[in-house]
Length: 304
Ligand SMILES: Nc1nc2c(ncn2[C@@H]2O[C@H](COP(=O)(O)OP(=O)(O)O)[C@@H](O)[C@H]2O)c(=O)[nH]1
Ligand SMILES: [Mg+2]
Image (cartoon, rainbow, N blue to C red; front, side, top):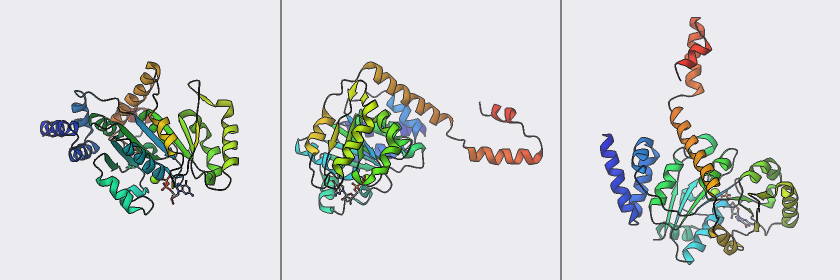
């Protein structure tokens, strides 16, 4: 049983390597539900160095619009792009961005574009629990750019930072209150800051405020975090943003090891807790208390 699933995945990946999009899609579906097979097969695969760009930020700031624009930039330069979208409310799920069905349908059938939306399954931070493995599948296929859009609520910003080579945090002048709340997250994970909706009133003040707020910790790895202003709907500023995404990030071995350590920790933790939850504990503990023999230390022994 197990063996045949591995064989299936191996042969899907072989076709994926040659660019067969349907095989990529099927491989993702398989891996979404089967960590064990993924781990077995990925042990023997070599992964490309396709740049992964994470795009995150609060709902409604224009992440999908910018993602759409970045796809356009890539395609116009002849690059092939894979897009993962982990936002249950994203218009990508309806096969259209912003009601512009024609353009989005074009992406869905475009030979150089692969778009996949993933359910979040309520995992920590809203990312799909197997997103690391799924992203690595995309690295086996011959894409030249991988974009991952996630809605930035709480933890997911931190997680996507470990997943992407560069993380773009998108803000808009309409969400003035968000930036205070996101401040520490922004400084920790942003490689690039985008203030979208630059056509909206208050843009100058917002950017000024953002610069001031970031000032004391404006440097990440001794590098200034650039701020781009964009208008997603007209694609203004997209060209420069795309170039910044594709620029070599000169990743140090130190940072690489740090990120891989985070991934390893996440994956192992996920495996260890996969069949348990505080809810299952609760049920068991409630029963034992009623029976009058509960002891916390005996209880945890059965799980370690
Ligand atoms: N005025 C203005 N509206 C924009 C801009 N970019 C996106 N929008 C609109 O903002 C809304 C949310 O965009 P969307 O890309 O779905 O945001 P997401 O939730 O962050 O993915 C849509 O109605 C877009 O048309 C922009 O630069 N200016
Ligand atoms: Mg979206």
